[in-house]
Length: 207
Image (cartoon, rainbow, N blue to C red; front, top):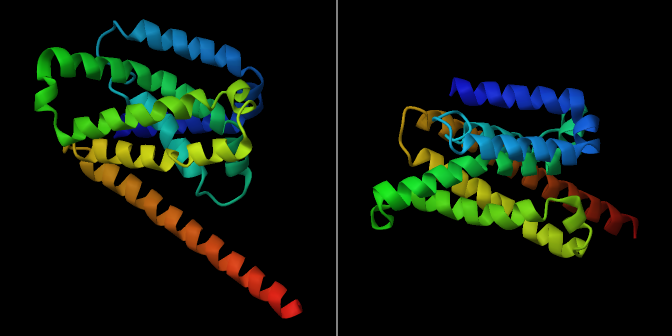
């Protein structure tokens, strides 16, 4: 819990202080992060192979969409695409280690529900990551890109269930995080719906 919180704090500070730099030199950042992830594949158990580092970036991306407009949201939105790619690169060692453990030691037929949701999250993550690259996004119709990236909510759901169903001493921590996000997201949807209805009534009254 402390490790994840610390990683979130570092990534948050990085976005607030260096958002323009991260966006401008994103290819260099991607290269460094990818190289680090590849080097850590054969290392001892650490926060990257355990998935904590990658998770911290996804948590920031997740909450960016429900934050009130302001200084923090502005800087986080500037690196939202970059952070999604960085998060994917950093979660890659965890996925590889997990699959090795599943295939060699645990057995596919013995998969727990938590493992199933982990695999589903990894599957959904692939197209989301590929289309987060600006060069790929520019080649896609805007409507298609938006429709595809609505599956990010499915990814968040799978990640949340994967973490909660592990049932370790961090379970309450994960429940609180995803419950808070769910409440904030629902509030955002209801507020947007209320605002749109109010504007529609105002236009009708003027007509």
